[in-house]
Image (cartoon, rainbow, N blue to C red; front, side, top):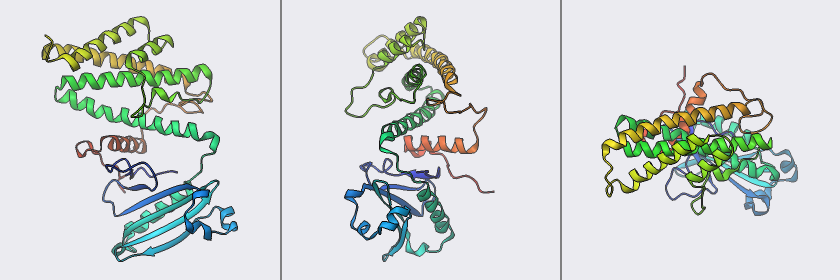
Length: 322
């Protein structure tokens, strides 16, 4: 479904809340209501679905009702789509009934409901991988806040760590795109972009090796990145127990920033190889924009907000009304 940029996904924002139904959203700024969506296999559908006629099931239209309690008013929407039972709610304080802000949010809610599509079974793996790819990009976007914060505060250890993470991320994305170019496919080798808590991930040195094998980097750059990685480990793990000085970290930080730019340019070249193809992350007729518009900037800011979940880095998302 198409979630408005202004809406924050709360399941990951609220501590100890699992990513399971209901999936909860509310505006980043001045929330006065909350949208919830639950999705179940039709075989496990709640009792209210027993009341839906076969004609309603075929029409795929939303059945709308309003429930009132002492404190809240809830708009309830239920619908069956393909093999899934969907229940959506928009909840707000009953004192806000007919408030223009609530009416605006209800219009948005209807647009969101109209946008919902059940991904065909055979396409659900790639859909899940694309979601992980988006989360990867969100983390990469947010990492620049940490990078600039480290630069501005002369926090050398943090700068080295963030640069190392970004170089690793650029190479991982380059590997995924290069493999798509070789196979002329949309397949995303998600093991490079996502590592679950209990998974054994691909280590940075292995990423360097894979990038070398695919021709993304040459042997000289591979050696330089390996040497930098050794320096990073020395700074992170042996700063106190080794002769390294804080002054030495200035040079290491500078080298990391230089190599970060080298790898970024290499990634851009690989991306451009795929633009205009009929496959891949950057294929299907996409072209590189000369500049970002306000919508793309707000989307990037929302990604960063969701990754940080700290007021220190929080950005305003709502578009200014003219």
